[in-house]
Length: 350
Image 1 (cartoon, rainbow, N blue to C red):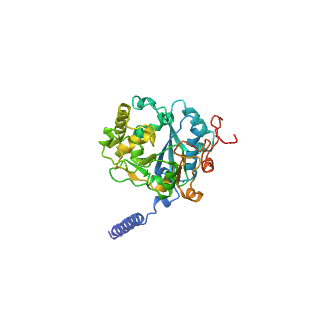
Image 2: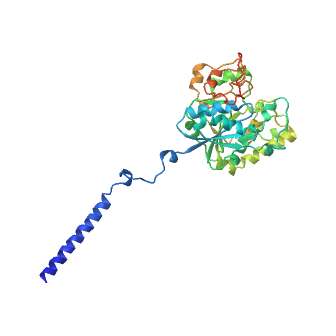
Image 3: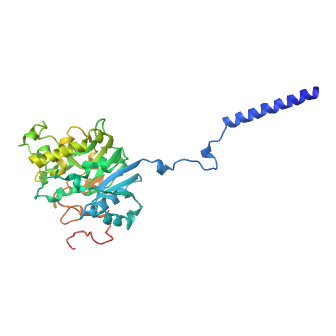
């Protein structure tokens, strides 16, 4: 009997020690991430937010898109996904250019734009036919081209990015705003340039205020305009507010009533955006959109000012891949020659 009692005491002691050992291990357990074993976690690159950047690759201007992409890719560590939009006939060329250059390392998707969506929405204008090219209107249809992203950057092809694109992506959009733009009156350093080339920076330069439909908008003609060559857009708000439908409505009205034309300041793609987004957009840091570099072959910014700029835009007739143009060295730093030899720079000695 005494022996049985002693065995029970030993068993009880062993049970207590086992329970204590289990509790100790649970309290002092080493985190699995510190052990020498595989942990099923996403890599930092996969966890990093993707930055979608939309750029068009138009026939005759593909070198512009290539230089823009190269400047973005070379100046950031961010996880950028390029959406390169083209027409069916141009897509093979841009894909080959990328895959046979140092840009083969970028993440990109080629998206075909169907110009049939513009049927009946563009008024023919012989004075600036280049402004009627279908890809000029890609920015109107962002939610139809880009499906899975909440926030998107759209850039014209005639730009060079000198800063980290993450900064532009981090632009804050106010609640209820579908997009952010740069005001044409926002940077005192550019005012002299605007005056010297005679460029309009108010709604008067874009809309025909002789037309009743424009006067009925109640927008003062002296209201500062904005430039839609650089856009940070919220796709949820864009779709909720039916921005694309609103833009199409004003395109169709222009066909019927000639409310704006390419003889005015910004052509046919800027004007409907000025109407639809009036008073309903957020601001982009002015240094993220230094523009008007293509408005004159003679007028130049100071080199110091341009070095401080985050983004340069050659909007206007005088493009840096053509001649004459200004500040071509800043653009050509990022140009990658066409492996097929189809796209060539126009230079005075060429």
